[in-house]
Length: 199
Image (cartoon, one colour):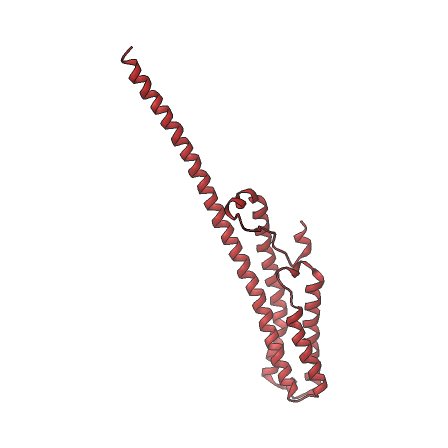
């Protein structure tokens, strides 16, 4: 009887120790999952931001080139026409889309139409003037501005694909991410492609 008591106590101790270690394993597993989710969340968030910055840089560079083209035209063209073009180029920066406004297709369409109109106006005016239309530097800048329009479309599509991944990830892991980012809004990223944003 006396021998069975220590054996029973040892068995009880082993059982309790086993329960404790099981709890620790569960806690470690949960902690590891949250770590993994945090890493993935931050990587996705950073990728979306970098992609957005590339979109904005292309638009900023395009505006600079359009300004330079207008300045070159100002040296050889009428003041009234150039003032109108300068006003249009200045307006581009004011009506340019933002991370929040891209979900409104009218904002993006209006901006793109204005960019196209300015470029067409520049090209038409340069043909009328004649001297600039033959300038290799001027022609190269016009071509760059045209290519920037195409480049922007691809960059927007890339942004949309990354933002969609981010949105899906946040929706799938919303409860865990709320634990990680208690003060964060965890909002969906707006998309250029409004159809994709509604899916």
